[in-house]
Length: 523
Image (tube, rainbow, N blue to C red):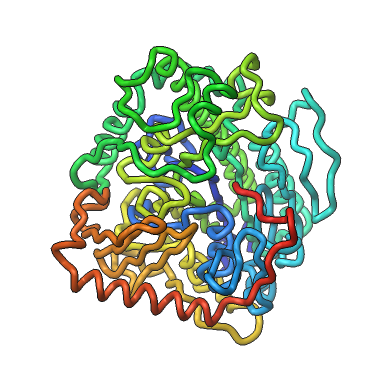
């Protein structure tokens, strides 16, 4: 119970999700960004070095809240069955709050939703849902308990990261005053640091001059920081000029709409023009400011948990929904080149150069299933049960593991009717020691990009390209493709990947094609 720290009380659960945050952005994962609250959670808890998401927003949220791969529940594309951002879960694919409700939990949501169906129908008792992903200062589409709110006016003093935390704090305060005898589940889903790069001026000022040295140097700095922190990083993998999202604006449009300082590729920093070397650090400073502010607001929520005397028996889990993004598009209110960087009148994206640095030490980024797209920090904090404070855990894990983990510590059961077995595994054994989590494989498919990991071997391919094979024990950065030297291993893993796809096709609900003009919005 909230406020009751006895060993037999059901724990409170707080899951915090960042959006498009790079693997090495937080200080406790090698970053230079000021994240004292996340760092404190890591110091008092555990950090996982090989934890994975799905490479994209909506499939990650489906996996996190259902305990299934997104393809199993219609929330990512399955060839011949449909699904995706507009896909609908089958009735058996209940969300975590519905699984906790029979145990007496009260459940709260604040922030991004991007799951099919109304929030309260998913089992939450209260929600603040920010559904406008194009505006940090004046959103037009947000709601409380599934009831639409008025658009926020210009200069209203609103900033979404702060507003999300404020709503969460208010929900917890109401829980303490009206439901103190019940345990709580809080799903805190920030939109930061997803594009557009919009930040408070005071936060931007902290980092304005920090990134003048460029993304090549930053990646080296973060790599060395990770090694000093005890992260098992293999040889250094420099930034490469690699694939880009197919929907990115071409270079001439980027230059015309953003200005001559924009760069469409992750080129060596020394090869950039003077205009680019002046402009590009602005974008990373804004990204850093957004992560910085998110950490500040996380601190306010954590303070509320302490005020409730629920700190010791609250299981806190922090993750990112995918790697940092190489996307470069413009939408929302478009981009005003004369507006203050990061203000409501601007629309900038991080781009491939800085995304590569943010995802140090890995390759590629959001949407890809190479390590840069699917690797996330996982910080776990729970004083009542975790005694190995400050340690790393190296067993591979995935967002599908969070529901089994929460169900084990709370005594809950999966919601819904007859269903396939959950593919995830509880991480609870790893809370005590760095033990392997027994599983057959981990599997990915998104936008035609595909991968499977079995033990330390990973088979991965970009859309319409050949399979690549990597030994992740010695090459997490995916630098040495061993597909030609181990053809039998490639064949074996291809069979395993295809077997999973057939299983998921059988489980996935058939989806009607979206109505014309109603395709899921890219985010």
